Length: 150
Image (cartoon, rainbow, N blue to C red; front, side):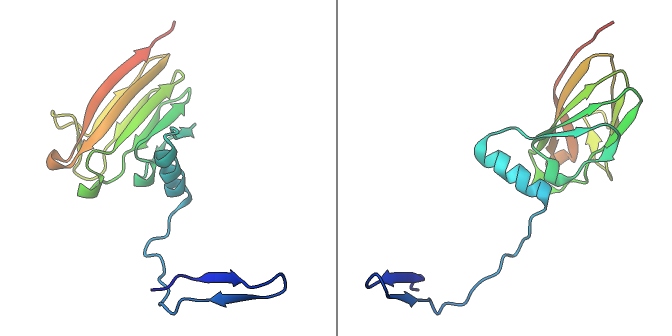
């Protein structure tokens, strides 16, 4: 297959060769969040999604930090996961006086004890990394830490 090419023959003329190959169209169109995540993965620049109220997280936000700063109790609902998201994670950061509850979608659990929600509380900043392990359909808690204030 010949590639498209432009040949300049003089300062006033040029010839254009266009490939006769059929053009293909993309099989997937990306959302804004997916593009941000792809750019971050390629450039190793961390992505942080910031929230001031509860929300349902999406698979396009995986492998990033999700930060909640609120004075009132809030809830993140984790996305429904499949085998193609095995090993993906969220770095969850809670700030402010309000609590943050992580609820699972469908039959996924958090940790080995079968929990379907995880409560992050404290007056300072709390951080947890949760990673999805498809073989047991569970979010595994990798790190948990916080700085409390009074």
